[in-house]
Length: 203
Image (cartoon, rainbow, N blue to C red; front, side):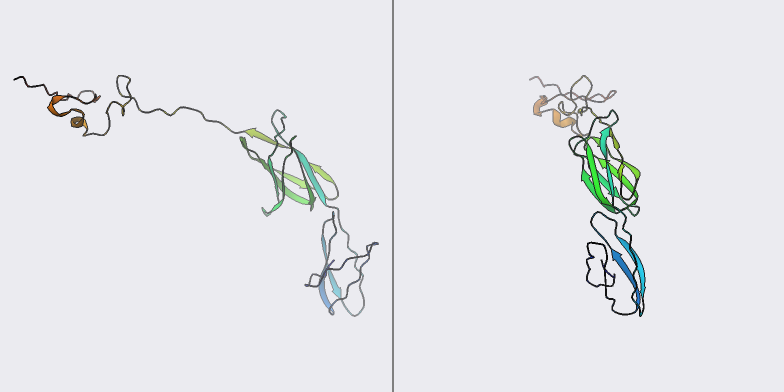
């Protein structure tokens, strides 16, 4: 328990009663908190006489559920995150072997529950956490789409790979014929284009 003015916290008694000394007359904020309860802040005006404001602490909420697929198969090791209305992360955990998860010590309010796992599309949905009780909310994950195929090289006319048979950049035509008219390779040319062929000179 604290006055909210930078003073040291003060622990109440077993019966819940407390006593604090204010630095002087004025307005203060009395903050009370306890394990398993929602913290509460109460404005207090202190004068010449003692004041005895009561503070009611609500029980903290709990959120539990299961991460599963559309056919009811549990999804283990899924990341479960709870964010508040401001987008701040309020709690997080991972689902167990049976897909179950539980988030405790939650302040009552509106949240967004998100879950994700490898090979699944992430999912998010709104959830309301209530004080002093457990809220159950399952999250269903859909399988991510898988694109499969084969990467192949370009093929030249006649069923031979283009690069393998020498069809590369323009201007390589002369490189494929060796000196003396002997060809070092085979080149496929575009339709409608005749390439000069050197014939050996007979002597």
